Length: 380
Ligand code: T4K
Image (tube, rainbow, N blue to C red):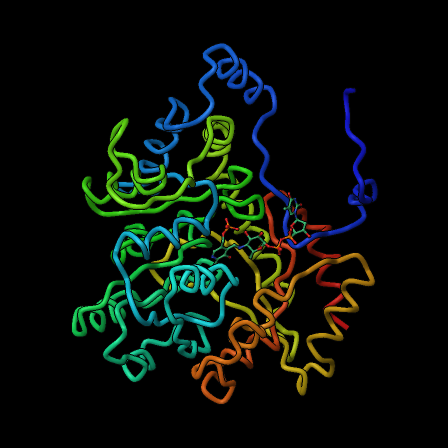
């Protein structure tokens, strides 16, 4: 058997423009690395490719300490464990469900705070009023890779003695004034899922600021083992294997080029959409090195003359598969709707943005012709 039967129709995918398409490493190079793995028969548990990828990612991302994980959700769960967060965690409802799920999986209570209408990130003006005697941490998200106001968030955290864990799943390679955004807060997490700017198929990382904390995280992701018979805490298994680490090493070589290509796509979109009434999008921020992880547009139905969902359906009919990231809002999901802070009247900005957003197709290698096809669905 040389190929496998694919149970769903991927044959016609060249006709579709999907919201993203994974960055794939050179297959020849991957085969060479696989041959080495086969030869040494070392498949996981902190092998040589794993160690090398941690070192290379620290260099590329300009961070001191990084622990690889098997996805981007487990580092969120582990960070809350490692910092012994209790009680309530202030967070944003405008994210992928994994952010709030991580809080829930630790037996903690998520407290939703509204977002800023320009950045779509948690609004620092609203954080202090959400703090109660049970609050012990803030978990903001750099949505779409746009940096949060980390200075103001840190000032609030310091004043109230709170931990800050950034969900930086979208913020691979993002810098502010030449410094990695991942150095903000107590810890930051990344996702290396197939749909991200940089991927290891599935994968993720936890960024810490000192050797001892990294060591503790490394114990936690390996069941808590600190030696053959010693357990420092009830840990979990969230290790990345050698095959994905090898894949990740090769893919890292094209990360810069991928971000450049995404930047070009963003410029094409901005240029084509700048005079379309009722459609807005995010602009670059001064002193920020963006990664162009997503290209969200926001539909003002009254001005545009069509609702977001009508436009979304029209695009879909023409094989342009944008996605409504992040709709529905996490706070409106049945599993979280009963929380006091989930009431839509408490989160007007987040509700409005979730009801107006479509993320356009955005990935390295998307051509001008393809972006024109996307834009043609939007320009009436
Ligand atoms: N925090 C935040 C803020 C996040 O956004 C995420 C993940 C996490 C935490 C958790 O990280 P991970 O544990 O996932 O590492 C996707 C991803 O599964 C998820 O990683 C991501 N955020 C989220 C925003 O998007 P779906 O369900 O929308 O993906 P899916 O499978 O529908 O794929 C979207 C499109 O991408 C497809 O229509 C076609 C294309 N695609 C996808 C895959 C998987 C490909 O072309 N090839 C592929 O292999 O969730």
